[in-house]
Image 1 (cartoon, rainbow, N blue to C red):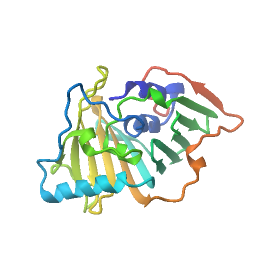
Image 2: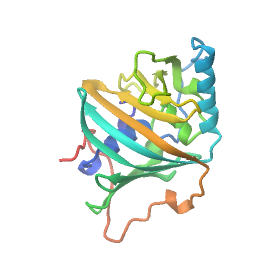
Image 3: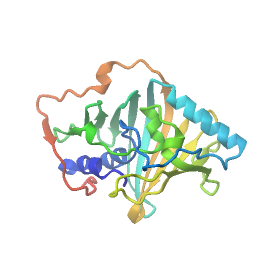
Length: 257
């Protein structure tokens, strides 16, 4: 993927869950994307019809103006069209740059970004893996909206209606975001992602194709806007019997064995 540094940390300690792979690939955003030298920002939605352009504007405004967000999510990891693993839970977001993913099924795990560290906590293993948030790289998917005031024009060089892709919801509209080029020469060739919006501008789904026939899909329901969230939701206090692991290991997928 685009962000090899965090991916390596997310696979640290042989994480046996797709949550590290999925979240690290698409959700963490604390630094603004970097454009190439001399690159100008142009509107990515010029080719859309009025209805689609209006829906995208509604989506952008809806998420950029929320200080706090909460949603239920379902995550699927597929290889060559076959679903290898499915996980589900609750996600919480706080501007700027904080989030928490509480995985509830099939096992309980937590992925947390507290503004200083990225944490992955596995209660079953009594282990918490962390890395400094400052080591993050260029996170450029539409879900950057969930923890920042990012605009589509800084994330996507082009946004178009993906008419050939069947929406997961009967009222959904699917769009393809062509990602802007990364300054990082080690970035992966991942070029575009799909995201699905409902008529009210809610984000319903995001799909990230990867090399080797791998695909990550996140579905969302039950969005809550500016819910009352205690600050401790975005703080990680390890239980007394937890081993904390620092450092990076090779970025090989850590699927559950």
